[in-house]
Image (cartoon, rainbow, N blue to C red; front, top):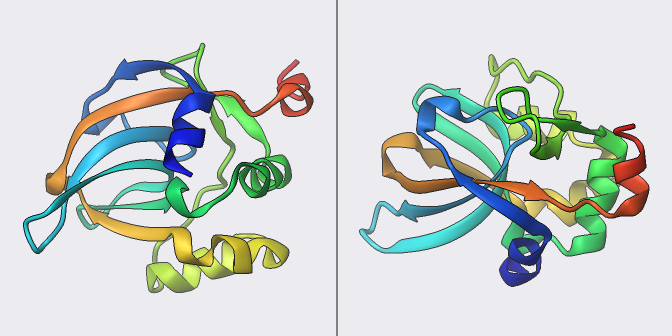
Length: 145
C-alpha cells in the first residue's frame, strides 16, 4: 500500500521536524530500536507528545479506507504550506495513554480497518521528512471550495 499512497502524494517538499503539524501526510525514514530502518508514509495524529510522534502508518490502510477516514474527519489546507492538503484531525489531548486516545477519537466504524496502522515513533529517530500534497480524490477536493 505504500506505493499507492506515494502515488497520491502528488507534490513533496522537505520540512524540518519543528514544522510538522497534525493532519499532515509525511514520507520519511525511521530508525527502529533494533537499528533497522524503514520508510513510512504516515498521517500525523500528534506531532510531538513527550518527544514522540503519533501517526497512522499508511502501509496498513488501503486507499478507499483512507479516503473514507478523511471524508469523515474532513480535509484542510496545511496552515504553513497553503498549497498542501492534509486530514483535518481534531486536537487530541494526550493526557491518557496514546492508544486509548487513538481508539476513542477515531470513528468506531473505521477502528477495525485502522487499528493496525497506529504507530508511536521517537522523534529523534525520524529523518528525511517530506510533506506530501495528498490527492484525496475529486469528491473530497470539492469540500475545500
